[in-house]
Image (tube, rainbow, N blue to C red):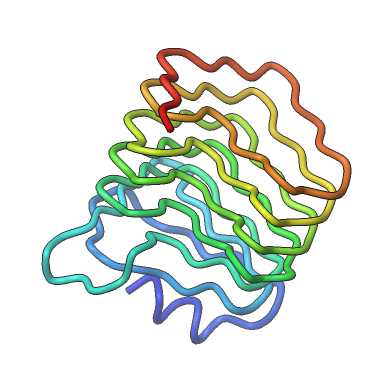
Length: 167
């Protein structure tokens, strides 16, 4: 499993995910790079009790994946880590990426977010330096929800379509 690979990895190691579909949650608690050069899907099923495809609690990188049917595709709320996600597609989530009450510098690059019932990216009550670039967010309630945030936010080449915020 991907989690077993993270558990057995040394700090700084690169974990390659082969193409295919995986039904599992991954808790990333050490500095590793997880990548799928030929694409792979991490999907939620009724047998999984976790709410996020990836829980990021470390200075990690995740790329090349499609994350489907999760409450959070990427969850890092409450963490103080610096992380990067790139070349992701996150589909059918509540919030595609959440960093609620987090500290740290993080990046979202070259990512597609579709069909989030709430936020494409949520950074409420957080601090750090953030970069969001080359990202498309479609069919969401809020594209980027960033209330009560301190730090520098760099947003470039981000397209938000079909966002319909409601109170």
